[in-house]
Length: 376
Length: 143
Image 1: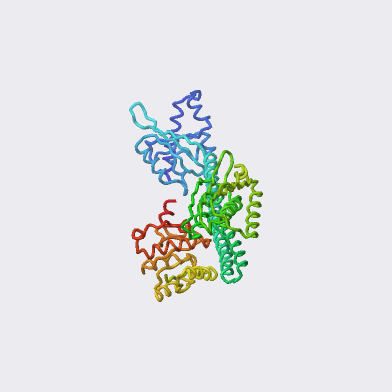
Image 2: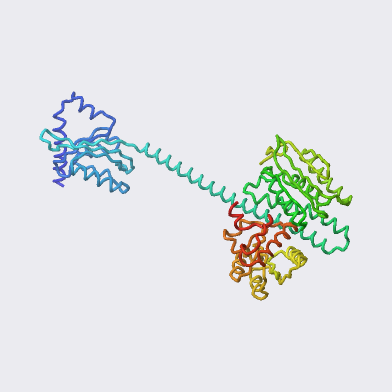
């Protein structure tokens, strides 16, 4: 106890001597005392490098009076949450007598904490011996709290974004699954409908009933092909009517099993919105079907199919050189009805031309009628 | 040809069988699951098979295809979703996409017959033109 008191007295004496060297009107001493920045001075030549002087700002920051501070090593400002590594770096700098700045968590007299931007630098005399350490403190708790708040706000925002993204991904996955499931069912149902018609047409002995069923099957199959082509493309919102026409006419002509048919195609990719796919496809189907009924299936001949854009217009044309055979009036009427109705839906114009054994049916419509205005 | 049908939709299988028989083929059996398919394949030794990918026991058609290929039985897939077919087509000659048309099926069948009867490789046949209704592995890869 006695040696403690002695040490405290020594520190007090050193502080007093330091003050005595500076007259009260010394502006540097006055500044040190009056500044709002907490500062202190320690004496490394005394045992355990005690504080020999601290200013008012330091007492205000820490809650300790100058009397409580003098004679103590600064480590009493540390507490359980103080970063040991930072303390180690400060101790090492002091041992090596070089300046250091560190951010450390310190404790006030009442046990509350503050973030201290600490700066320590050695003070040397003329001979180069370190006679004092000067330390300034800056309470940056508020700044640090703001930074922490910001960081935590950012983190929580990031987390929210991550959660929303995960939600969206899950929703998209569910939607994709649903689309695939519906697509699968629609395709299966279309094929089931076609299969039922085929089975019935096989069973029936009545030629007219059979022809009627064939006629229905023909249109159902065309719609089936539309659906198949619609979902084969990566972009399910668009449909290549030219590719459809190529496959349809190749299928139909192949199905006739005749070697006296010459088929030619002049088609170039025309992408149309999915919503226009069915009427356009049915138009192609009716034009091809008409040529087949009028004689292609009975006596062969030439069939030429055009699907392309032409001067702001979209053209579907089928031209043939069949040897005409009588066509069942009901089938003729049904074909005509299908063609005209689909054309009306699309605002298309139908022109039929017959000359020197060649029949050409041209369906034209302004490109804007199949533009993507209604695309969603 | 002696043909095996692997399809879980009874109506579709029945119709396909009628179609094949009308074209002069014999259907040796209809299987609705992968187990049935392999059992029937072993027992009846078909010359060819139509294989749906979605079967009663799940999307097991691809496994059936691989096993058929191991046994040297040529086949095509029949599916509404070509994306479910693996990159190597599991040894299939090709795929007929559902919903197929009667013409499309007949054209594909004609081509398949030439390939199957013409020998194991396409080169040995007299270069038939594949119909658009039959998706070949090379076509899909090129697309």
